[in-house]
Image (cartoon, rainbow, N blue to C red; front, side):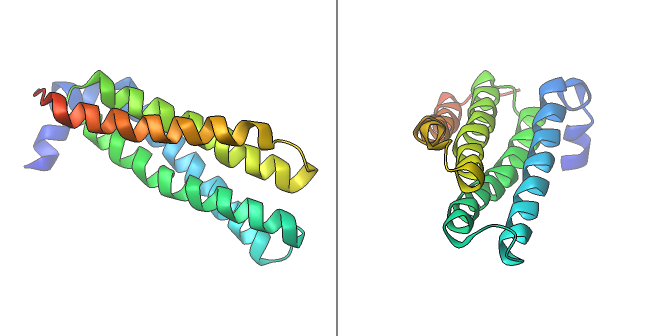
Length: 135
């Protein structure tokens, strides 16, 4: 049944769904790479702590982006796209800022902005659920 819904009019034509899926996959791959680098001592101890925090957040939100890619195919809601966009921004700014800080000692300026994007993304997801829009 779920496969039938995914192949429907929204399922085959949602460009944003493909974008969120691709970005979720790229984000997950990068996070796994960063975690591998920290596990193999490629990043110094202080930097490894920062990189691991960034990678954990990125990996969690990579899974959320994959879920949102599926959700926007099933449920037509602009707020789901807004949530996904904010999650991507959070990954770039929060996790990216921590990765940059781990490697160069600068980049922490973006971390609070990225954290705010994560929070707003989650709240957009709540808003989408409360609107109860149907396909």
